[in-house]
Length: 434
Image (tube, rainbow, N blue to C red):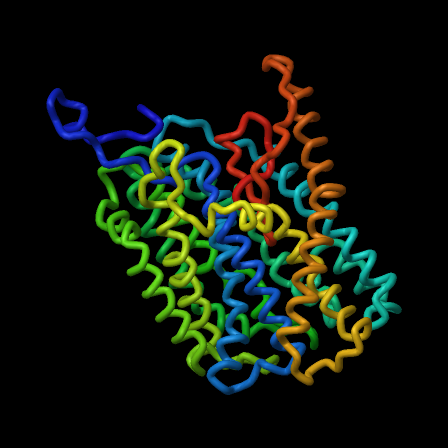
């Protein structure tokens, strides 16, 4: 069985060629790096808008507040790239990825830079100093969504990284559960994933029945965000399936502007009261379920044009903005942008004499973006990349049957939330999209 099978008719002499292989079927996809940069910027802007008092019930205020839906893009990216190797193993004869290597890759990619931020915030940031031992432990172990009142100033965005960690732990288990759906039965994988996404909408009501300690929010746990991850998992299945399958979906994805117009409409609906409040108020259960389900649709519509249509011609670029040098650089640094930007935002106000919640969003945004990019570049070069390269060397050294390889000088980077990798397409586990 080939890596990406064509139709029997295409293999027959004189038959027309099979449809082109999707861009996301294997390897590094530069456009995803650019999309990751845009998503990191959106997350930063929604927090800046909130801290400058621009998030409210006006149309503009709701739009700024709903830039937080960029997290759905991050989760979709993570789902796509972490699941792609498992999907390939189901549709082809490719081996399943090693769970041990996968966990090592995730821990080394996420924890070093994250732990630096946690220590700096809890030890230095005035609003966070004096945190309790339980707050320290919860933040150091990425379990803050389960510990009361442990989402502290400068680290509140880390709830999504905690959800990501829950997803990381579950990926190999989900792969085992679907291991029997291989070959001809692999066609059942996408319907089952979509069914799981729909069923997860019930978490808005099921979670409310739990007896939780005050200060613990079940809406910050992974069951609610299944649709956001499933969007990526489904895209992975569609991208690596035989090219004669899912043809209509791939054709739809090739009409990028139609996809993105649908994404804009979906975002507009989420920005209405149907998606819940944009402030810190707790949404109604039906609003939370609506936002979770539509968030999965949004992530799918934004990412599908990047991974399902064919790749560009050799030497060509399909995405002028997303593939550009600045966007690729920001994509490399975007994990640092994500983990550092609230610390920087909190520091901008006192350093430049700006009152929080009193406007001047443009000025605050320029300062925050510039400093966040600089700090993130340092984090990538001095913390993230050295640890990744060290793991790559260690993995290479422990495989005596393979020729020793030095890690690439400019490896495909990781996303701001996940740092996901497609292990099946890399000889040495390095960070890749996202």
